[in-house]
Length: 375
Image (tube, one colour):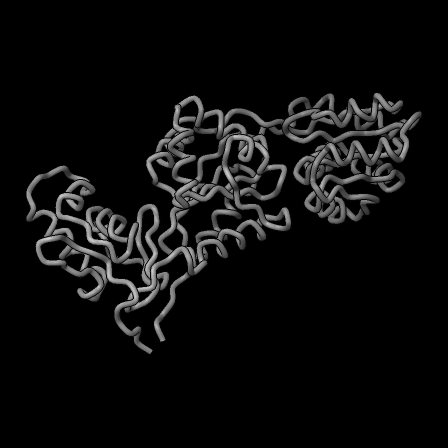
């Protein structure tokens, strides 16, 4: 049986997250990907810790009817801040006596980890769904604590206030500028030149920040073209994260569940699809952004060989002239011998010289389905 390497072998993937970027990158690397990280946003924790502590004490002194938890990191950070000033125990009592509404499974997980129970969870992970639920339930005269996510109030607090509730806002962290703006710009330019197979997003603000850089650099048309050709995949952890990408004209890959594990699985499933490869005599050939694989084993191809293979694989079985081969070589040359050399090295890397055929006086072609595959 033909050996198979990890499914993401040969792929080059950009991670745009800062929060849990290491976990996400590690999961992709374990499946064979080459991963680059360029966080489009930073996290500014404890923007005003004194105010957060004061409002926590206010909630202890005047208990809320409902506590809204929008993010796992924000909820955990709130409890950590309370613990640092010896308020964790009374805050836990307050939370245990209130109705807790969570925005999505990650927030619910953080609540459960604290020994508490969420009374209701917005499975769509949107503040809009939370606001609609609360207003429909009736909040007139109720006291509601709202732990904001990194983008601040997105209409939830104003919606419940407009329905008659009194609110206590809790700002634990905010999205800030990227830790390395130059790295973000380099990654966007690289992506526009076809340097990545996939870009993964874990938050809507992060996706919006990436798109701002894309528009500032004027490379949105190039990225849309690459995505339309199937050479670039944008993957979002959930529908909320995907929304800015959809508005920009992309068709992002979105898993059924809004979890990092599901996001990784969706990327693996996508790149494991047979229709993304070419069936040749010795296995399944795939051409990625910066590498090519045969049954998910990376081929030792230099840039010139990869450029030639990409050309031939764009239309398997079609004949490409020496002039066409010369045109895709990284170093411009008009010497026909350079085309012959590049094709020769490509044949060596493929391990079977018959995979790239020579059509006398016409050129070269990739030979799909022409030889019986070995058992």
